[in-house]
Amino acid sequence: MNKLKYKRVLLKLSGEALMGNDAFGVNPETISKIVSEIKLMVDSGVELAIVIGGGNIFRGVALGSKGMDRATADYMGMLATVMNAIALQDAMKHIGIISRVQSAIKIEQIVEPYIRGKAIRYIEDNKVVIFAAGTGNPFFTTDTAAALRAIELNAEVVIKATKVEGIFSDDPEKVKDAKLFKKITFDEVISKKLKVMDSTAFTLCRDQGMPIAVLSLFKKNALLNFIHGEAEGTLVTLN
Image (cartoon, rainbow, N blue to C red; front, side, top):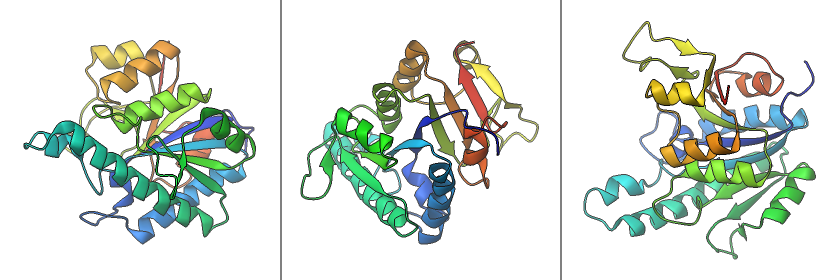
């Protein structure tokens, strides 16, 4: 395998990715497959941080639109991401990956609070850092948390791991001949009205020149291939 193209990486995982084919919660077989792919990255020497969502347990936006106070719903969603982070950490432990969970809201009996300097030291020591509770503020998604943490940690790329192989011209599940973009600029994403991340996260990455890669979490070796510079998914860059 070629030399690493990306040494320090922020991986964004959705909560829904942990469900597998279940209706909610964490599917043991699915999380096992995910951490196996992550281990390949870690064993290659990548300095890895992960931001995880909570949509498999609780989705604040949806309940906020149905009458629950949006801030309350979002705080509940943040707690769901803590649960997912602990589940991910436990699954990693079983295959020999050393990790630390840091939360943007303080739950010190369970996980550490987010401290930037400590997070950087952890990843420099080859420990995976899992960031939970988003940004710690309501009205911001975990996409925004991923962009923010990537910039704070001086990551080289944000990888958004999804159920599809990259960014398409149309929904590939609905349009058979939808085109997969191998590389695209931030401006092209905007002009084509493509959905990559929420607008706040996308703008943060564009303004800071932080590349975004979108690729399949469930394609074998896709993460490993990408960090070594092989063609996988879609890469969003400034030019």
